[in-house]
Each structure stands twice: as structure tokens, then as C-alpha cells.
Image (cartoon, rainbow, N blue to C red; front, side, top):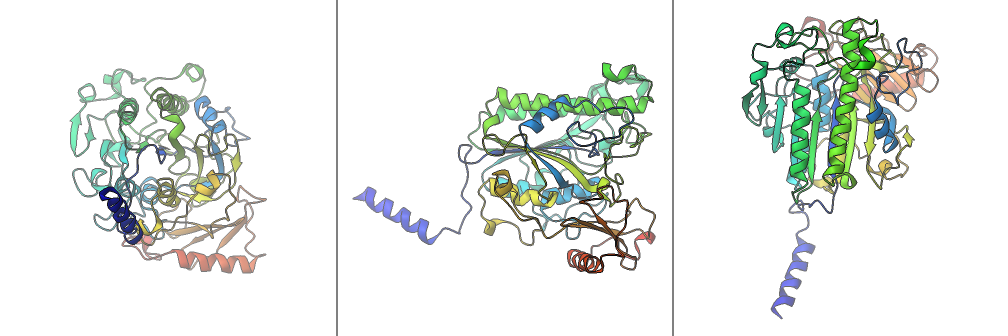
Length: 480
């Protein structure tokens, strides 16, 4: 009788108190979530994405190519921004750059109002970890990774610090740890023109990732891990000056090429990142985690043109116009591979439009977090139905804004993708450019004079998507 009464009371509590808490999850009921992010990797830098006219051949990425055969590959996915920090803000907070706190490099998350995907998943019972580049706050503060929902962090807090590929210290949670081998690091000390005598930060990230996954395999909790590489971003050796694309060694297939050294380094760091992706995916197999882990692979923005590297050398934007800092497709469209064993159809290609701000809602859906428990005023939707093979309607629009776009205009711009159309506007007073991406993926022909209704719709959506921010005021951005 006592047992029956307890069961009855439990049922009554479940009926009358369902919304009082978010149920904690366990590793058996929901998948692990593993997001791997490249830094400044172009749409055309991977072997599986189109790059029909690279003058120096394709960079070798066999492990990521193999991952694509096990993943749903997205052709129309978008980074959060055309530069690093606002892109990460969108990825972490579920808001596009018309609404998120960080809209240009050098800004940080709000210490009270910005709720991250890590906080949402930790509240749902996930063990949360981040390894690599943060760039959204300060160390040992409420805007550090630990202050924003990550149980474990190893890497760079500061974005400028992340330019140093051979740092004398990194952060372990809220304290710094010295890297003795990199004290007074320089190209001469570390073995110029190679840098194999010092410790490359990316190798440390992979080592920490392997340890995290090993520990996760022994834990009853599911995990969310964010591995944020800094390759192939430009950087330095013992300095945050973007003086090259430092590689620890040149791979044999590039060493004897008659290319400039910076281009041999660029190709090498992409292929080395590919090897490292293969290494961490193999670890999922080794520790028995593969079958219950959803893997995302993407880039934070378009191809860079910095540190002496020329993005045209390998046609890193592929068929797209523009590169990092551009509001055209080459600045914001990102590779996206999603592997979900037994659920997402491997080797298939999807044109479903998706942006970084959709990740929070997607991750919450994977974790069975109810919509009522999510932060308010999110911009994203869940991609889970598409991953399951179900048909989804396209989002109303994909929106970006940026303070200092590459194009020589007034210093502030907006870009909007809706259906097959791409609209770009610089400041509110400028004429809207309009492109038909279904027939002009390279945005070569402005058709705004032929499609008045579509231009007006784009303006309406742009006005709807933008909310005033603390910096980069339209019309005044060139004075900031």
C-alpha cells in the first residue's frame, strides 16, 4: 500500500508540476554534441566543397572528405558573421548580428543577459567543455567560458592572444598555465623557417580534446564539447602580430612546391587540421562514443586574406564572391557537415539554409530541452527535422550586419538571404544590391532594377532584423 501511494503521489507530481524544472538527461537518452570550428577557413578550402578554378590544385583534406561521406553536407549554411567575435556570439547565444551583443571584434558578451548554449545544456545535465579560442570575454570573470556555462575550458580567452600560435601561456579554466617551451618564442628560437622546436597550440588543443573524450567515456552524463581551432587564421610566433600562417612543419606534398612560403604554410595548416580532425574522430571510436555523438564541423567566417596569404592563391572562396569582412557570400557562407550516426543520412547533400544562431535551438532540441526553458527572443530554429530526413521550410531570411565591411562604403552594412535572393545594403541611405543566387552564385549581376518588389521585401526584412547596438551606429560608423 505504501509503495502504491508513493507511485500515485509521483504520478500526481508529474501531472501537476511538469513545468517547474528541466529534466536532467543521461548519456543513454540523448546524444553527445561535439562542435568543431575552423577559423577563417574558406568555402572552397575543403576538398568536398566546390572550387572549380583553383590555380594551384586542391588542398588535401582526406579526413574531412571522409567525414562528409558519413554526414549530411550543407551547401547553404552561414557563419554568424564575416569576422570572428560576432560569429561566435551568434553561435553561443542564438541571436544573429542584428540582435546579439557582440557585433564587431573587440567586444564581449553581456555578463548577465547573454545566455549561452553551454549554459542551456549544462542546466539540462550535460557536462560542458570548450577547448581553443573563446574571444568573447575576459579571464576569471563572468564573461569567461567558465562564467558562461562551460564546466571545463582550456585555451585562449583573448582574441588577440589567439593570434600567437606559440603562446607562453594558455588558460585552464580561470587560471593561466605557463608553457615553458614557448618562453620568449620566436622564429629563430623555435627553428625558423619551421617552428617544430616549440609547442604549437593546436597540438595542445588536440591533446586536451583526447583527454576530455576519454574522461567523458567514463561519465554517466552526456557531453557538449566545443573544439575551436585557430587555424588557418593568420598569426605569429611568440607574438600576436598577424605576420604569417605559422605551421609547425611543412607537409611533404607542399614542401617542394615553388609557392611562396606563406602559401605552403597555409596549405599545411589546413591539412594538419584535417589530420587533427581525423585524430579526434578516431578517439570517438576508441572510447565507444561515435554512435551516440552528433558531430558538427564548420568555419567561423569566410576565407582570410591576411599575414601575406592571398585568398585567390587557392581560390579559397570557391565560386563565391568576397572573403572575410565581406557581406557577400564569400564572407559569410560556411561549410557545414553534421554527422549523426543512424539518424542523419551520410553522404547526402542538403540546401537547407541555416545560420550559426540556429545552433542553440538545434542543440537544445537534441538534448530534449523544452522550448519554454530556452532564453527569450532567440532568432534560431531547430535543424533536427532536416537531420532526421524530414522536410523543413526555409527560414524567412538569413541576416548579417557588420560595422566595417570589406567593400569601400560608408562603414556599416547589411546582408540578407531570402529564398533564392541575396540583398546587400551599405548604410540606410544606400541603394540595395540584389542577386539571384539560383543562377548567379558569384553575385556578378545586380538585378535590383528588375525586381522592385523583391528589393522592397529585402528592405522590410533588413529593417525588421536590425536593432540598435551600443557601437557601429549606421551613418556614423565611419567616425567610430
